[in-house]
Image 1 (cartoon, rainbow over the protein chains, first blue to last red):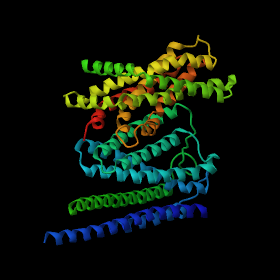
Image 2: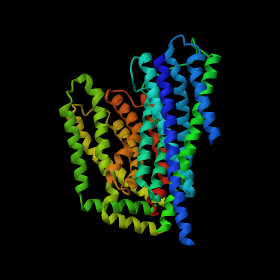
Image 3: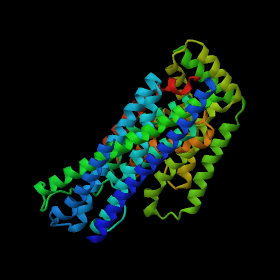
Image 4: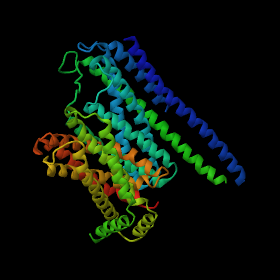
Length: 45
Length: 218
Length: 223
């Protein structure tokens, strides 16, 4: 029963991990986006 | 978004508590049955996910709008994740109950084919990349796949199968504590699905914006 | 109607001139059957269980080569562009390709059957008409999905390699039911005892033919 509990908890943890990785990747991309935007603004001005 | 995340985590913890402590032990199967709450949760989410892929694919073909394509591929990716979990948890449950990790009964056969079909969809979609024409191919494929599944199920049933009926502490109806546990778990899985889907869609949109912006700086 | 016939006829003429695809398919089908027959140790117990499956797997594999056939010729893609320019209903093109694939597959299968009967030691008194019917229905199933998917696979980087990956999982209901009915017929049972399998097979054909008609335009159109 212990093993069941831990295996299920680990599965939940993995899924949350996937979520967190997604969030991190999105934030990184968003930063890139901001940098590019600033460069474009500079060029236009 | 944060609220959603908090709610999700709370419901996951609640589900774990309910599955392992609150719910009574099943008479016939014993403790192994406890993983079944989670298993049902993942089946439910996978079904919703693939229905979304189907509808989104149709809308994508009709309207040609990228947002439907994004929805379809995001939902498919998460759906594959949940189906994989369904197969794993189902297998864990099956070994002590049926004595085997796997069998070709109608339910399992259809689940396996479902898994394969949507992995193929993801392969097809990723081979396409930015190419809109090839993205449409993936949509066509997912529509065919969705229609195909009931036929697979019926065909597999025409060869006998072992399917379980797994509710209740002693056969018949489902006891109320188990029902509550099931509902909590469903909620947890659904919330998890929603938040994963939103995040995945967001990721794809940011990628799109990035690509757009990069093409302008050239 | 005329359009469909003209497409079918065009496919046949171009195939007739270069018969290599036809010969390859037939040879492949022979090879598969021989290899299975060689490798499987067939006592009469398992023969009835195994050989219908062998037959259908042979049809499946040799058929999947032939399905790519109708698009892969260079002349063919020019011909398709020409067709697309004309205001032809896309579903007519699908029907034309579907029929030419169907006839093509059936020819190969009909030639394969006597070889199968001989190699696997069956009498020629078996219910050949009923078996033909099942093969016909199953091949329709192959052709509906195959025509649609080969248009897809040939337009991707992977080309012919992609077709089996797309096509085999989808075609499973056809295989399951066709093998089941064939097994039953070869054991001497009647066709009517397999009515539910037959219904599923026919349903598959109707559903996927309709789906092919509706979806073909999204697959063949230049972007």
